[in-house]
Image 1 (cartoon, helix red, strand yellow):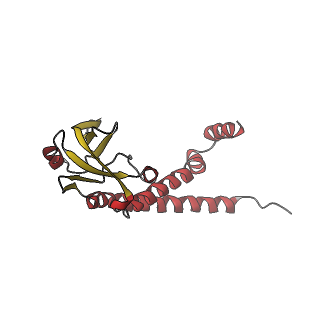
Image 2 (tube, one colour; image 1 turned 90 degrees about the vertical axis):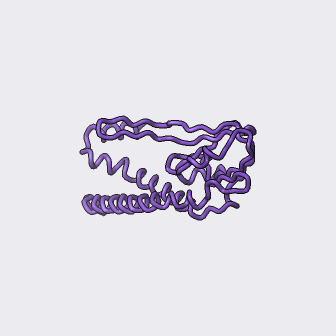
Image 3 (cartoon, helix red, strand yellow; image 1 turned 135 degrees about the vertical axis):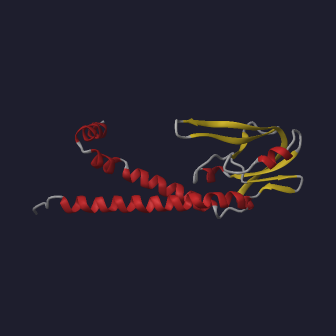
Length: 186
């Protein structure tokens, strides 16, 4: 309860940049670091690190997941959802991939093999456990693991830059605070 009162008092009386630095800079830096490390770890995946799921296609559909409709910017985010007869959850491909060949090739009742992350690996990076990392149909690979790896390279670079910048900003201000603290007489 005392920490909540301190938080509220600081929010009311501290300058915004001091409040931000005290309460948000370190957690944001740690979160960015976690996501960057998890995303970088995705580069090391091979098919042995993933769960292989084989099943009959029940439904393939393209779903709009988010609509941004601003005066200067309009965008729809879509994903391909693949439902299998033997599973209650759907598997997805986001619109950062060209999944048109997948829609054209897959038919209901056909057998496919899907590679997804193991449950404990889903906590490391962004996305869901049901994200498709490789998709095979009739012995042909429609979505290759290397496509997924190539897609996250930019996210690793951006995450690393921001993590380093936020860490440097945090350390600079911590040292600055320590220098400005009054010396305690012994």
